[in-house]
Length: 453
Image (tube, rainbow, N blue to C red; front, top):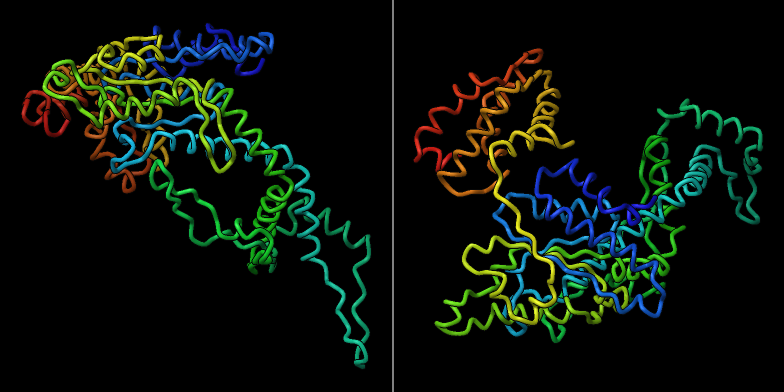
């Protein structure tokens, strides 16, 4: 079963492996992803009429809004971009225009599709690379200038010699040999800044690309060991084997059918009702009006071709401490029909975040210190003490969600991390006593915890 064909329940189970809690948000994005698969099964005449149901996530920082969207995109193998709404301004003001979101998404999709295409031709590229390495290992026949007396040219290597070298190459016997090889030079040169009606955009167009085949491609000579030469030749051949025109077409199609745009801090371009009464906030409302055509469906010109945004899934997120979703302009509200509220994290959530996910912080710190030969064991009472401290500090200062755990753990293990290279073979138990000894004073002193934790 492909990622797109996962059922909503299976999608939630996959998200549960990395994100604790927030079941409402997980269910909403799971249904949105499944609807994409459903849409592909609908008759073609109706398929274009089915628009994605965009989502607004409402909740404080650090509760998993961005992570849910990022993991969803990775699960669906879809082009994904995260942008902050506050970086954009209305046309005519200094800043990036909102269409650059789609252009950047198209660039990411081309990279994604190109890498997939290179993996598909990897075996063929490896075979060609092997031939290049064998050519470099074998003596080449010397060219003889016409009419010049001298020694006869060196004969070409026999086929059996080449096959013997091939066996040695595959068995790793030649890995220590160094070769002088000629590789294509990396593309360089300046990029163009194009003045468009929407503003200045870095299009990243190389002069070499614009001039086509007018100038021959440059090469450079390098001395590499055999395994490195194989890798370098394989990368070159994979690039040659990929049809870039076809890759761009596939990338544009993938953006249009499965692209995901995560717009963070949408509340920062939303003026509260009270602020609007004091006067119009032109720039904030202007960003919303510029976002509107992209979210509701339009065509954006990119260097890879025109991209339609009708079926891109937009997920917006914001804390909405001051403004409310209803303070968005009505037209934009209508384009985000699904709203889910993410809950603040509790002490029990912090315990689960520290231990359950595959990339949990406890596993990360244990693995990092193990590289220095320090064996760190987190005990259950120690984990609960860490969770309590993080929850207390969030309650008494700013609630930054699970990000508080990074601060607390860094402070807890600061001395151990500093001395780890000098103490290989050390064993450390992180229990409740250890946590209270290291962090207790900081937690009790509210001023210190405000500035340090």
